Structure formats: C-alpha cells, structure tokens
Length: 351
Image 1 (cartoon, helix red, strand yellow):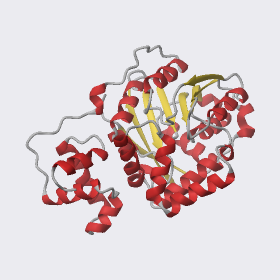
Image 2 (cartoon, helix red, strand yellow):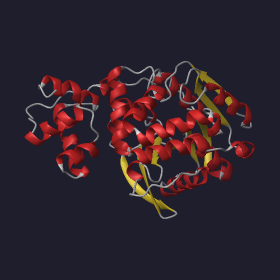
Image 3 (cartoon, one colour):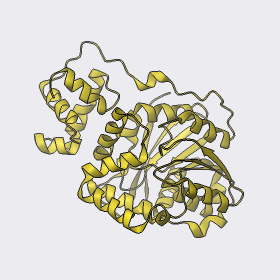
Image 4 (cartoon, one colour):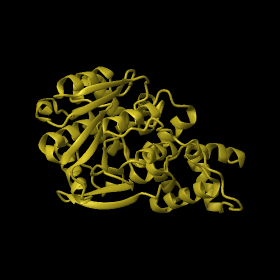
C-alpha cells in the first residue's frame, strides 16, 4: 500500500487532520484512544490492520480536534456534538458521501450522533467495542480516580490504561503503547480526553438511527464491558450483534483477523482470507548506517522510558528536533516500535 496522505480541514475554527490510504469506496474509522495519525501509522500492527482494510476500501482516518496531528496548542473539553461536527467536516473534505462507518470505542457515540443527524451520509455502520452511555462504563468513583491518575501521574496512568486496553499483549507491545501514549499527548490532554470518554452519552438518540448497524464486541473486553455492546445492539433499530472472543480492546491486538473478517463482512466484503502479513511486524535494519553521538544520546533516553517532550526538556532541544532524531534512529536501526529501542540500547551498552 502507498503511504498515507495527511490533509487538513477546519470545523468551527478548529484544525482537523485526516488521512487517506487504500483504494475503493470510502470507509471512515472514527474513534481510538489517543489517536495520532503519524504515530499510529508507524506502529506495525496498526498499519498492517489498516492495510488489509485498504485492499477493499479507501480508508479515511482522522484525529479529533485538539488531539494528535489535530492538536493546535489549545486544550478544550470534547463534546459528542463537537466531535460529530468534526467527523462531518472530514467526510465533506474527503468528498466522500455516503460513507461506510466504523464507529469504534469512544468513536461509537460520535458515529451514532452523526448517523442520527445525517443518515443520508452513512451507508453501512459497524460499531466496535462501543457504548451509548459513558457513565455506564464504570462507577463514578472509578471514573474519577482514573482521570485523576492520568492528570496527576501520567506515567502511572499510561501504564494503567495499557493494562485495560491490551491485557493480552506481550511485554514489548505493552511498553510500546505506554511510550506511544506519553508521546501522543500531555497529561492534561489525556485527562480531558478520558473524561470525555466517560461523559459521552447518546442514549436518547439511538431510536433516530435509521442506518442498519452491526455491533461487534469482544466478550471479555476490559475497557468497554461486553454488556454495553449487547445493550447497544438491542437498542439500535435493526442492529445485529457479533460477539468475538478476547479481552483486548484494540482490534489490531489479539485475534485481529477475526475482527477484520467481522468488519469486512458487515460492510459487504467477502474476504475469508483477511490475513495480516507477518512481515509487517518486523523490519530489517538498514545496512551501514551508524548513529550520530546525539542520536545515541537520544536512544538511551528513549530506552529509559522518557517521552519526546521529556527528552527535549532534558537536552534543551525543541520537541520537533527530538521527533526527527527518533525517526532517524528507527530508520537506521530498523526499529518497529519504541519498545524495540530498549533492546537496541542494551546491545549497545547504553543501559
């Protein structure tokens, strides 16, 4: 697949970044915890997952206003209607209507709000790992404690969220996701995003959705309880439920091929051989490329668990410069994830 194309549009004075890859009719993915168009695309499992979808559809992804590549320095509380408006702006900018929609995780209430308000712009809708009422995800004390942990102790918070989102992942993948979260967002950005996840509520809009939905949910999902997906399928008019085994919330973790087949089947694509290429999970190192002294210093700090922002403060560099150094290191050494930097640093005697 070709590289993704990142473009920008605006909604209500806010910048919205969106990306397109693959070929075929439009398929919009809305919602992921801490999405970041650039960083997600560098993660081998995520990219391989999207590339399988791209065999059949032009995949359109976006970062909600104030997050990922859409971050413009401001931190504002997200609302369902605000994010639905951003989704509408992306659909409009892409010149793609109607679209098939994958409304996943906290993107589920956003996708539902969009489908209820503008049914003519949605073809098929898949709701994955979703919910209608954020307050139903956990009791009030748990929600408050988790948001507080993320805001006050982002290092511990990112690890706690990793335990929730991908409990079945191995150590390397878990460490990589911890690093990803801390690189993708500040503590305050993450706390506000999590608070929004818990606040979104479209329970009163379900009956207005005329688009037929397929609800796909893993039975042991630790982030969004399966019961919330089952209730959603029961309350969305004409919806069907596809229950899958597994505890990991992210579809590209665990039995991702089962998720792909469920999604593709729901939008009318028969791809029983939706297999993820193993070659994408490992990349061969480039030959004859040595790290500079500064890159070696950055590698050691990455391996010690610091985010790009923290490294920039430590070395008195701009975050952009650190980002460039990390990209160069990963290219030169063929590192698929930040977690792989730990092994590379160990081999070089940096830890």
